[in-house]
Structure formats: C-alpha cells, structure tokens
Length: 258
Image (cartoon, rainbow, N blue to C red):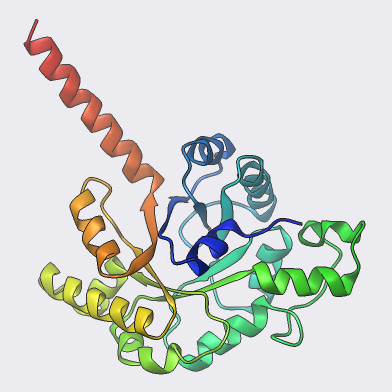
C-alpha cells in the first residue's frame, strides 16, 4: 500500500500544488507527475469519467508518484466508498455547508474507530495480499485525506463550527461558486472573503485549499499562498490554454523579428 505523500507534505507545513483533470487522459497524469506536481484532482463532479476510468487514472498517478484524489459528485457514503475503493487517496467533497455534513463525510471516508466506511477486498487494500485486514484499515485511515469544499457564503458563515470537526485534512475554498453564492459581487470582495476564510482555517490548524485559480495569474496565486493557502489547484485545461497562448505570442514576436 502507498503512503500519501501530499498528506505528509501538508503535515510538514509545505505547500502542495496539483492539477484538476476532468477527462480520461492517463498520459496527462503521467506528464504532470513527471513535472513534479504533488497531486491530481480527478474531477468527477464536473468531469465525465466512469469508475473504471478513475481506477486507471489512479494507476497512472501511482506510476509517476503523484497523489490521486477525486472530487466526488455528491455526499453519499456509497459514492465516497466506491471512489476510495478504486484507490484514490482522498476525496474532495463539494458543497459542504455545515458541521453535520462535514462529520458525515469524515465517517464515510474512514474505517472504525474513526468512521464507518464499508470494508471490501479491493485494490485500496492491496487485495489483502501480504497484509491483514486490521493492518490495512489502520494504514488507510492514516493515509486518506478528507477535503470538504466550502464554496457557499452560508458555509463561510458556519466555518468556525466546520473547522471543529475532527478528521478534516483540508478545507478547500472554491472562488467561483463562492462568488455565485454572494451574487457575483466585485471580485475584490470575494477575494477578501477568501483571505479571511483561509486565515481562519490555518489558525485552527487545518490546511487551506484554494481553487478557482487562473493559471495566467501567478501573482494572484502567490498572494493566496502567502495568505496561508497550502493546497493549490489549477485546471489542466487552463494550464494548456496558458501554454498555447504563450507559444503563439512568442512565435508571433519571433516572426516579427525576422
């Protein structure tokens, strides 16, 4: 079974950066792993992957030592279970708006005595080859990451209570849905709300995830990291657009100089 290197880095106080992948493209995960990104968010809230495809994306991630995490489509324990049984090392759960919802997510993601995840003989347990069930459940409880998403202004208002829930590894803040829940105000207001929420999470000893970042705005991402955001997500498609646009600009400049 595999150690969760992203979780270890966060526990050491390091900043981790990962990419969001919403399409079935194992080669993309191999490339970002080779480029030393820390994790991949396999996006099955907005993405189109089947569970079988998720399992193959996990295999690609493992081959290049990038932590496979999945954004699941809903809070249901059966949903969380099926993704974890594919071998993802953490679940990013959207629209967690209360402490009660956060507690339910933690229970669904961990085995007794920390939760009530159903036990199956799956690849997450190395098919129980060379390891006992007690050993594998204890190890997986230590390695799994539980990442509730706070992406509504109501959840921000309840953040103090959510942060008290044991077993949360990262509170992941999403700018776009947060902005929508606030009625799409001036972006500076959304930014102030994000920065205040990040500060609360870090003061409570919980890692702070920051999503909805524009890969073209490195300065903006750096601001969030300086404010305490230490789990940073970037869209793979956004990175592709930035790279393509940069190449076109450089090519145009080179051609103009000839």
